[in-house]
Image (tube, helix red, strand yellow):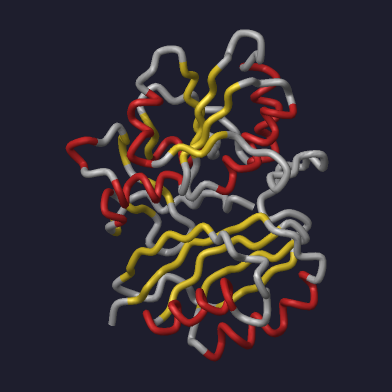
Length: 254
């Protein structure tokens, strides 16, 4: 059996996030879904897997069902497949943030950088005037990254503002392009940079996963593998599973 995998997130106002946990667990259990979902006042984030019909039903419920109403009307979704179930169980966790930057003033629903489609990404990061920044942690960067990308050498995302303060200057670095696995960290990172006075901030819409899904290998500027937060460990172009000898684990985006 082949399982369908959905990586998803959206920044949205969910003041009732605690009340959503129980019905969301029941809904996922009904459709034989496993994985991890994070709920917070700022939105939803996670990766889940299950039978194709089950995943499709859950996505419809997220986008149009009674549980969330119309609040998840701009859900960022990436689909892939797995030969075996990549998760052992289902977890729905309540968090302060769906991805932890620890900067309370940063609100991606109010301001974010300019989204760049996968088809336009190569041209942007090939511009010598553009500073390219990988917002992921050092383990993920070690597995693969884009040409010319700066490695913040962070262990967790909340260290990213320290990297910005040490390395980037809004008066000198006029154009900054950022990327991450699925796009969620870049939403917050771009919002943070704008709050710090950076004028032109860009981020890869849908993240590395969308790029690998969209761009053929012969046109790619990606080097290596992309770490994912399940038992498949890494994906390559076309979001194909890649087996790795190194069993070290990375940190989740949250």
